[in-house]
Image 1 (tube, one colour):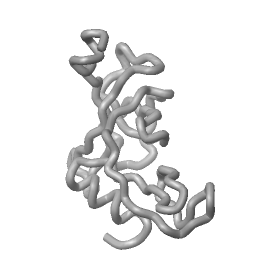
Image 2 (tube, helix red, strand yellow; image 1 turned 135 degrees about the vertical axis):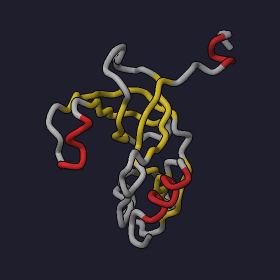
Image 3 (cartoon, rainbow, N blue to C red; image 1 turned 30 degrees about the vertical axis):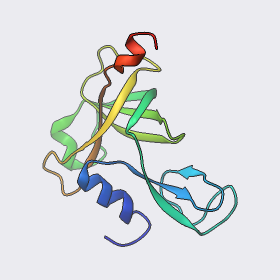
Image 4 (cartoon, helix red, strand yellow; image 1 turned 90 degrees about the vertical axis):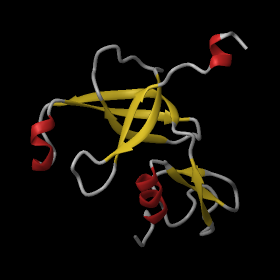
Length: 133
């Protein structure tokens, strides 16, 4: 895979979210861009994200945007605030129990498609956080 999104797609193949990070000012960005919107540097490197985030918003799609997904409607699409400071879109298995700020974990699935697709699942609280540490 070549081009701006090559690191993203190679990471997705491994089940990892790979973001861009400016090597000049440190800004993390997503989606991939040619130059940094903060300092206009062309120097960029890959950053493997934790995959952890919280729900910012969601929608339930009742009409497929592509015929490939016709058998999958309705489906939930989340907008998630990732720990690294960017927002990422991805599927979620169900609408029940969704709320703003819900902790989620990003993964990737193929589900019969050519490219891996981002999917979120509910995140179990860290043991330290659950104990009040």
